[in-house]
Length: 357
Image (cartoon, rainbow, N blue to C red):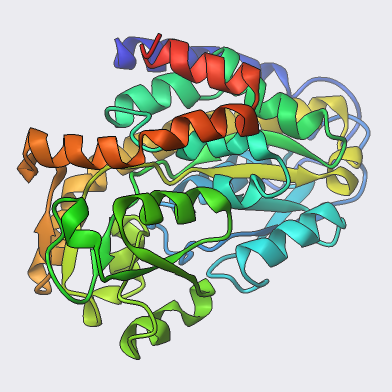
């Protein structure tokens, strides 16, 4: 079913993208017979910031590069996007501030960081909300229905920025330097670094661990010096950032997903014509689909990569039903707490679409 839907979307996007090269005078790039969107006579350069390593196969950078490629191609080079990966522009809270102040045009930022401004986005990170990646994408995907509408509406209706899409949806991991972790009892006595946003603090404290806030730039050193014992980044980022040098234990509980949402500042959005906004939307949709395919393909790859450098990886399938249920029971009270925080639209959509009601 997923592949059928994907094929229909791909055909729809192809037809839509083809239609976007319509009339108006513009200067085609050398050797390119397509036309840029009508009305733009000078190249518009926009800055995009994110945490991904920037490598072509990086799970976060892959869809970002795809998005940039499509936008630049369909605008015939009249819009250029400068990509600043690996936290070059600061941590995610700093980049969010830059988006809100119009000093950064586009951010691809974690949903929980965005939720410090738009609490509805905490719905992405409610514990054990999604059974697997396919269900995650079916519910959260671009214009998939009421859930997407609730997320987009939360950002757009605030008047602070514009929500476009979500990328890099692998499940977050659970890595540490001390011991294998399989159940809530194993979390006791461990301190985990958590990102900005209340939801991750609540998750790990509910499981029995202590938490600390350490910037991503300082995380490796914090692990090396024992300031924190572990963290919860996705396994791909764990490997790419070489955290395996200071942590040797990893468990894939699949508690919550890594959702990086593409948001555009008001200043940048206002510079785009209606035709260009549609190109951005189509590029985001196609890049999101590429993100799902890429992450799905590389999940097992990173497990083997980590094992190859000496990490004791416990996959989700290697956990017993009793171990997973014990973790679900420990974090269950969070759902009641966050019902009022994420709002009725997002909460009810999530409960309905995941079969909880």
